Every structure is written in C-alpha cells, then in structure tokens.
Amino acid sequence: MERAEKREVVTALHDVFAKTGVVVVAHYAGLTVADMTRLRSDMRSAGGQVKVAKNRLVKLALEGTDAKGIADLLKGPTCLAFSADPIAAPKVAVKFAKGNEKFVILGGAMGAQVLDAKRVSSLASLPSLDELRAKLIGLLQAPASKIARTLNEPGAQLARVFGAYGNKAA
Image (cartoon, rainbow, N blue to C red; front, side):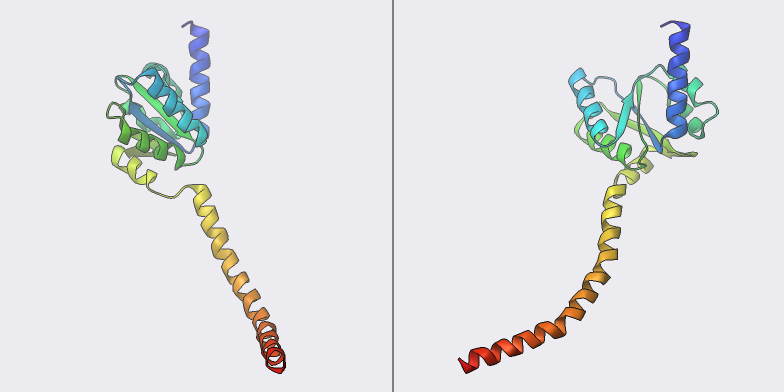
C-alpha cells in the first residue's frame, strides 16, 4: 500500500469515526470468507458497515475523534463494525458472535463513551430506532382512536336500537 493510499484510508476512517453513532471492535481470526461476507451483508441490511484495516492506520484515524478511546482494543486481527443508528451495529455483531465463536467482540465506542464487550451486548438488547418510532406512533395514535370510538358509540347504540325495533316489528 502506497503512502497516498494509506492517507486516503486514514481520511476515510477519520470521517467514519466522526460521523457514526457507534463503533464495535471485534477479533475475526479464523472466519472464512463466506462468514465475513455474511457479516458484511447482515450489517449492510441493518444500515451499517464492516471494515478491516491495519490497526496502525485505524489508530491514526482515531486521533481527534470522540472514539479515540478504542485505540487500546486494536491488537491482533480486528475488524470494525459501525452504523449511524447506535443500536444497529451492536445488534448485528452480537447476533453474529453468538453463531460464530471465532468472532469475538472486544468492545466499542458510542460517541466519547468507550464500551466493553458487556456494554456492547446490552446495547444490542435495546430496541432499534425504527422499533421505538413504531411504539411511539402507536402510543400517539391510541388516544385518537379511543376518542373516535367514544364519539361514534352513541350513534352506533342508536342504530342498534332502531335495528332491534325494526326486527321486532317485522
């Protein structure tokens, strides 16, 4: 890798660390190409990415970002999983780690907060942003539908009474 390519990789990773919501660091030694491809695919479908880069370049890219605390985790063959949604990358990484003992989560960062493996797992157990939005919309719609039912109920009762009288007379 030439110096210009290295500089480009460092710049790209620096932008990633500055803009993403969460970064997960994991060891991936022993995974097959098919396993890594599946991890990348799962992460992409969740809105995240997986990158493998030299630890030295990653440490250079971490300088000046909130995630600089994860530099200590970068020992051995490591990969980075990241996403803008603070739940997506940990959720996919933890799910993948359960199925592959060779994929070991070391920790990560959420903003300036450095996370150990246990905290990454607890982040993964939280509902995603889309799930929270759906719950919030459901909570907001519930009172409106109750009001609509309450307003419609007197008319419905009246219609049932007229219907009963109509059936009785016939």
